[in-house]
Image 1: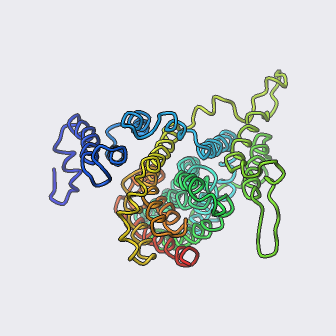
Image 2 (image 1 turned 90 degrees about the vertical axis):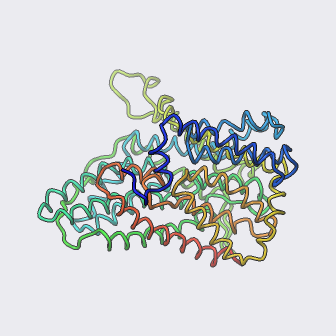
Image 3 (image 1 turned 180 degrees about the horizontal axis):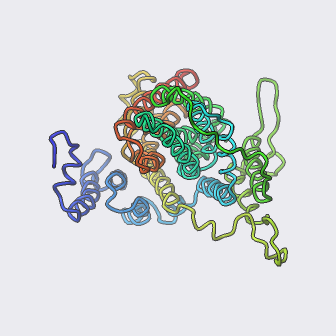
Length: 505
């Protein structure tokens, strides 16, 4: 039964047959693109500049309404940009293999190796075995472990690998608190939401933690290379403190909302006495090697202390990027053998990673990256970025902190309903135009927008981690919305604090 307070989109979905909804969503994109191109808001009618604006609107609508898979929408620039005289297809296709995409691929391959050999489970069970029997200590252990792992492994993979251990704790609680079902439900919901939220928060801390960070990284390298560049260390020094403070505040809020003060949870079995397998050791060392190489590539400068980076050992240091490290470590995974097995020659030993393991690479995300880079290329190629900068010149009268707050609020809201990668892909070119038009610092708008793209804690559809834990069936939608709203507001305040303290000078 429909109610008057049902969201309009839900009412539309209920009233229209499935095929009609899909056809309507399919038609909206090209129709909107034609209307934008026919008008003169972005330049002469049907000029490459106007068509570029139309293509962006088309893709934005399809990304939000999803009449086809996100990856299918991501292929549109290959066809539309050359057909509409926006850019040569060879130039467009080249955007789909940008070096930042290889940072993403290398990071995923390393995560696959961690998952394949169970290193993530050892880390999780070790942390939980030390948590004791206090619900709040268990909450802290779950959040801390998830936060750390999600810095290096995708947020979705982190939640999936931690879910079994967390559910074991929830099941144990259900058996011991049968006299208080409400307490049991709150604890389970709180712990599962903590798992999802801390994975999202951890992804903010490093360049490889979540795709929006890598999208920002690519934009910065192209447009602001002469500003010293963003590397792994510089991003970490800015984002990690915000992420850690966000984690601690989230822990306090979730603890107050959901965690009972009484004890009663059995301690997880300790794992210290179980010896590490050869594969776990080798993957662990390679994991640490990647972290060290990322942190030391550009060297360390602090006051009078200057330690050159290892990239200086090569003839062209600037040609070596964080993606070089990611792919190099990934190659080692395919070269280093695992534990020897009986009756197998050395040449037959399975490596830490086999090519069949790479079949899990998320092609749809890679295409999503590439399409965003293609759109950014079209922005520059057609002069649309300069046109937008001119049209938005009135924003110069707005104080910078107010403009940043508007951007953060907008991105956070959009991220509740749309893919965070798609939303940041669409917004960064616009923010780039505003920054250039106002002659702002390169980080002043793009950095807070990127961090805000990792938000979206209120709705089950906002992030993949939210969807996973909500699908378990132990969280009420109202609980996620209330807790998520508090986290959204907290994150907005922390991002604005970062802006005021470090960016607005």
